[in-house]
Amino acid sequence: MKQLPPDTVRLLSSSQVITSVLNVVKELMENSLDAGASSIDVKLENYGLDRIEVRDNGVGIKAADAAVMAVRHFTSKICSHEDLESLETYGFRGEALGSICAVAEVAVTTKTEQEDVSTQYTLDLTGNIVSQKPSHLGQGTTVSVAKLFKNLPVRRQYYSSVKKRKEELRKVQELLVAYAIVKPHLRLLLLHNKVVVWQKAKVADDRSALLAALGPAAVANLLPCHHRHEEPEIFLEGFFPKPGSDYSSTSSSGPEKTFIFINNRPVQHKEIMKLLRQHYTAQYADDTARNRYPTLVLKVTVSPSSVDVNLTPDKTQVLLQNKVEVVLTALEALLISLYGFRPSPDPSVKN
Ligand code: ADP
Ligand code: MG
Image (tube, rainbow, N blue to C red; front, top):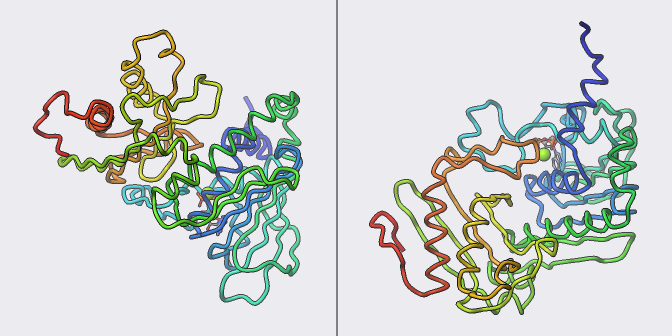
């Protein structure tokens, strides 16, 4: 038996963390949000395969931190595992930038408020700086990722069909839409081959954010609802379909219209989605019910100590300590919005 060489170990684990164009965009956007950005531009060339660039106006990276910013397991967000109990940032593993370096060519241009000019750092595949030069960009950080998966031919091959590439662009757009819903003050822009694919201006409140994200037709069919569950404390805000409203996409391969957030993190929660969808489609007696995917937004806020976000490297799945209560509270909110009454009186669930 032999120990694998470090380069191989790095590539194996990095390619598990960084799995797709979507995944790169998500990691970079979350870094921008963690840096307090109010504006994020995402630029893709050739669907992100030639280049992905994410530019923000956040706090930037201090020169002293630059040397380790992309070295794996270096993070400014937590100091130990216990800090996950009170996690307020999207990132915490210190893995994204380093992993991207292992599978692409990365340059980071950054400037903090204290510095006069920005610096462009070119990184090597271990995440170390190979060169640096002054640059002209303003405060914030721009990460440029070129030739994604250049050393992973099978993964590049996955994008050889135009259909797959277009699907990936659609998913990137959906990701931006998801952040648009939970971040009213955020300005967002998505460009593909210099053409604007989607954009959102800064808006004042949740409803305006929803309008910007989903459009007036969808929002006209949504009812806002708020619920608070005490012991365990769960705060739920939803935008659910009005009774009998027919605003739904008709196939699962169409744009995703069911948005679930846990502590502002867009997540895939199959169980909650399935349950909500079942009750939504139950109001339709006909055959079309099967193919209806409701436009629906559910924002769940729970104590950070009751969520495990470290389940998958992409953090799109979470483990909830009080899943049953969360699911029941969400279901009750949906039923109230659909039928206007509380179906199963549960003394512990309060409006
Ligand atoms: P994590 O987000 O888990 O800390 P990353 O590898 O994504 O790990 O980033 C490493 C570190 O680099 C971050 O902790 C942060 O200090 C810094 N960083 C990365 N991107 C940005 C950005 N856009 N703005 C400011 N700092 C950043
Ligand atoms: Mg990160």
